[in-house]
Image (cartoon, rainbow, N blue to C red; front, side, top):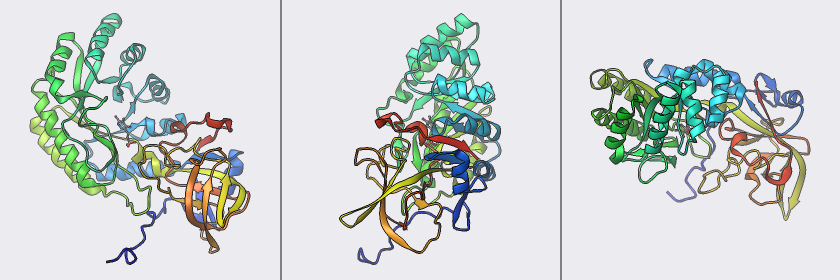
Amino acid sequence: MTAIDRPIPVHAPLSQFPVRDGELVVGGMPLSQLAARVGQTPFYAYDRAQLRNRVAELRTALPASVKLHYAMKANPMPAVVGLMAGLVDGIDVASAGELKVALDAGADPQEVSFAGPGKRESELRQAVASGVLVNLESMREVHLLAQISQDLGLAARVAVRVNPDFELKGSGMKMGGGPKQFGVDVEQMPELLAAIGAAGLAFEGFHLFAGSQNLRPESICEAQQKSYALAVRLADSAPQPVRFLNLGGGFGIPYFPGEQRIDLQPIGDNLAALAERAKTELPQAAFVIELGRYLVGEAGVYVASVLDRKVSRGQVFLVTDGGLHHHLSASGNFGQVIRKNYPVAIGNRMGALDTEPASVVGPLCTPLDLLGDRMVLPRAEEGDLVVVFQSGAYGASASPQGFLGHPACVEVLV
Ligand SMILES: *Cc1c(COP(=O)(O)O)cnc(C)c1O
C-alpha cells in the first residue's frame, strides 16, 4: 500500500453532543443561547448528563467491588467536584487547595486520598486533621506525619505510593517506573514500611500510578496485573494488612485523528480476575481505580468567538477571543511531543456544506497561540462560535490565564 492509498486519519465521532437546527446542543441548550446565558465568550461548558453517563458506563463495565475515584486535578471547578463527589466513591487530591474544594463539596474524608511529591508540612497537618488518607511519597513524609500524629493525637492514615519497577506502555505521560520524583522506589520499600510501623502510623495499603492518557486496554491491564503482583509481594513486609489498593488509572480519551475510544470490557474482565485472586492473596483489600481525564474530558467544550477573519497569502485565519491562555492543551503546549489538532467545529454552523481549510488562532502575540492548524471547517465569519471538543479535562486550570493580560474565561456546569 502506498502512502496515497492509506485512509486519512480522522477524529473519532463526537456524537456525545446532539445537533439541532445546525447548532451544537450543550447541556440541553443550543450553543448561541448558551453563549447568551453565560454572557461572554470564551467559556468552558461541562455537561452534567454526560458526566453522569460516563460514570454509569464505568460502573457497568467494572466489577462492583472496585471503587471509582475522581482525580480532581483534571477539572477542579467546585461545581464539577460537587457533582462528581455524589457520583463516585472518592476524590483524589494533590494539594491542600484541592483538599479544601473536595471537603467543601461534601466528599467523605474516609474516601479522600492525597498524593503528590513535596507535600508541605502544613498540608500534611491539614490532611491528618481532616482524616483523609495520605499517599506518602518519601521517608521525610513518614517523619513529619509521625510528629503531626503525636501533636494532634490522631494516627495519620497512610498508603504508600510506590514507584514500580515497570512502566505503563503507550502512555501519554509516564508517572512511574525508572527514576521518578513520584512515590518511593520499590527497592526502598522494606525500610520505609518498617519506619511506618515503628512510627505507629495507620498503614492502609498501596498506591500505584503508572501513567496517563493511555488508549491501549492491553497495556492498562498489564500495568494493573503488575501493580497487583507487586502489592502482593510488598504486603509481606507491611506493618498491617493491606486494606486499600489503588491500581491507578490512566484511561485515555481520543483527542487526535486516528485515535479511538478505549474498550472497557477487557479492563473490567481483568479487574474481576484480579479481585478474585485477591480474595485469598489480599483478603482485606479494596481495589480503587483513580480517573481524571476519562471521567470529565469528553463532557466539556471550550467556546470562543471569531473576532476577525484574515486571509494571509491564501491561508484563512479565524482569529478568536480564546486561545492558549485558556486552553494550553489544545494549543499543543501541554506535554504533546508533536502538535496535533483537537477536534474543532463551528458550533453555530454544524453540518454546513460550504467548507474551507482554516486555522483557528487566538489573540496572543505568539505563534504558539494556535487552536486548529489548517482544518477543514464551515466558512466562518465574525461572531461565529468556535468549539473545541474534548475540553473537560486539563483546560482552564491547566492554562496560563495571566499570560498577556487578556480577560479570564468563565466555566459553567450545565
Ligand atoms: C494526574 C493523576 C491522575 C489522573 O490522571 P488522568 O490521566 O487525568 O486520569 C490520577 N492519579 C494521579 C496520582 C495523578 O497524578
